[in-house]
Amino acid sequence: MSKKRKNKRKINQKSYCILFILALIFFAALTVWHYKNDPKFRSEADETVALVTEKAEEAISETKQLIEEKISEKSSEEKKSPAPKKSAPAKKLVALPEKLEIPVCTGKGAKTDHEIRKFENYTLCYRESYEQAEWSAYCLTEDELVKNAKRSDDFRADPEITTGSATPADYKKSGYDRGHLSPAADFAFSEKAMSETFYMSNMSPQKGSLNRGLWKDLESQVRLWAANFGRVYVVSGPVLEKPASEYKTIGENQVVVPEFYYKVILAPLYADENDKASPEDAQSVLAMAYIFPNEKCEGSLDDYQVTVDEVESRTGLDFFSMLEDKVENEIERQIKR
Image 1: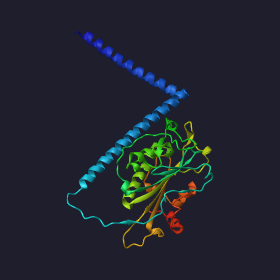
Image 2: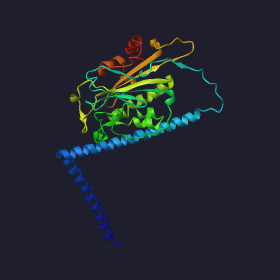
Image 3: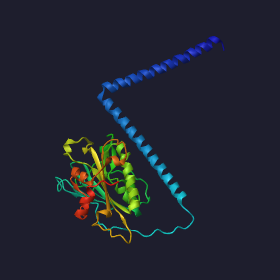
Image 4: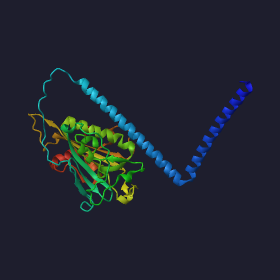
């Protein structure tokens, strides 16, 4: 091949490259122009980016959780010893009233805008004006910390809410997660129990950075406490301290976007045969409370720990009311770590 042909081919290749680069620049400039000058295009572009980001974060979170579970399983196997171990001395728990986890709604509209919804393993109170639950409560025992069911992800409207619950469509392209109040992972002991946590009555619009951040870390910590203490009583929900009309909303059903979320936990302490621990003794129970803003939370869980009294003041709820007044008052004004 002559040098002329070679040079001509090189020139053609360079020309194609330049044309391709110019085309990319043109389309990029056109896209930027549309984004700045076309509100509809800008809105659709923002929704697409938010949706892609949300899905990517979900995939990363699920992969991370799977890796952690595999590491945990491997660690458990490594710790097993072929040599027989002596059984630990039996421990007993302080006896506490049944349904201790159910709070008392004392705020305005307690009769007209509060609908109690009882599931097999948890209970919630739905507020129609906010289109979500004010609280979702359950008792988690050490025996229930087994995984017999995979995450179902069967999000659906709750047909038992008489006024109609929020729907999955309300959250579509909203930029918010369908945040569980009572977490699915705490009900992995049965397929039915886990599935019931995916009713939309148990969801609230949470920023993904909170839902998959410190909020998730606290949910994991609750399971550790259940293993350590034998059982825990848990109440979670949004802080609904303003009229619904003063909040941002999403979806056709105008689901309120809370600005803060709380979680309150009570654990009975172990008592051996010689202890005189009882429900009338404040040293026999431990209460912890947390409030998080609906955004990415930096730092540790300790940075967001508050007294139960503070959560009661901001939500208008009365937690652990079945305890003796003296015990309730003492544990709810303290912060214990």
